[in-house]
Image (cartoon, rainbow, N blue to C red; front, top):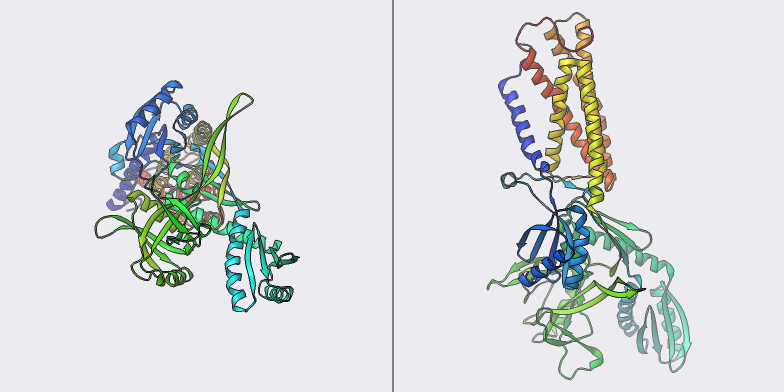
Length: 618
């Protein structure tokens, strides 16, 4: 029988529409603006005293709030107005200082029964919900100094191997000074350096010793810069991925800067803790009794305020050699981090620990983090951010046997173990970085963008619905129902996969509306043509859908290929547009062909009819 779907196909369409309504529904519950307070130090607790101080800061600045929530070490305060988020953040941050991180957040209001079904709202992009924009700069001076320190140790060994007698090898900032016993040995040393290290620019100085001064040439410095930027880009992307931030932007800007944008949910507290730390590890032996103070340094313990230990200045290896790090628990239930080193780091660790069994080895946690200070300028209090390098011991344990490429770090708290493993697993920064600029895109601007974007969708949709109803009559109304269903299904799919909606994404939705209508126009025009050729209404419907299908499929396939290419080569907003367009093509094929056909079948199928309400002369 013409124009009758089997029961299973109708049921399939109904199930798809019901699921789409359920998973699109969370987007009807807009989140509340909020601020989130988190301790800067892992493992710290959220005390009642801190909560009272936050309330005092908000009340003192006449900022209304409600729905105070505490989960673990994090406190969330819901605000009544979006434009109060930034003033609230500033007031609380000023009161609590650097011991706590105050971040903007969007607190969900989705009903629990929807959350139990796995339904959640779409994540909004930086241009819609606001977010944080970081501009980070690589400290190349410090990086080059570190490279020169490596060269210094390497040259000491190589000169001994070549039997070139020298008094000392000193590092003077970004230069090395090799003091030879006389000018003849210096000449041989200069020839060796020129042969083995062409990246050095040499100069000679005569004084107490015959000195050879080495400086890195510009090409090598550029090479260092490119490597450091590429490695830091990879590391930052890994860290952002570990944080689960949707549609982040991490890209190079200029010679030595990196832009990081974290859109969507404005829970930036954890992001600041992870991205803001140029964290690394140093493995050092504890200094032996009687060791020279010039060869040792004293450090405090991260978890014990008044405990210190003296360590050798010589570093065995660093976190750069770590290939994997996973938090776990030992046989007694205490947290630990299992470390895997690369071949070079493992070889050095084996060589050093073989001779140090019975001595204690320290794991030194090195982090570079911003510190905010306030000073009076022209009678106004202004904030200033400086970079501070902090080193603290997180583990000091006796070496029981020779260590290799795999070992474990103990003596950590659970939160510290997870954070340390994340930082090491994501990769160490090749060069230290500091924040040049931190900009918060306010939710008020995002709200305005959402309103303008939704107005454009609503206006375009209203015009299309009116024209279709007027021009195609009953068939136009059927197309309108399918068009509305198409938008619901599209929103549901994007919500289910956690896609981020941006302004270009809204443009993709508008384009999808046009494409969905275009498919129905092709079908309805074909039905009119079949009626004009003398076919019965039932045959015209059947042939109209069947013959228009290939045209619609070809047109949508070519557009889908373009969308996939945009997604593959594009970044940021371009990807957002490509995702929306791709899903829109798929959903419009379903609604414009299957859904409208099902509705038309319910209206006209299985009975004798004389004419169709499809406009024109039909």
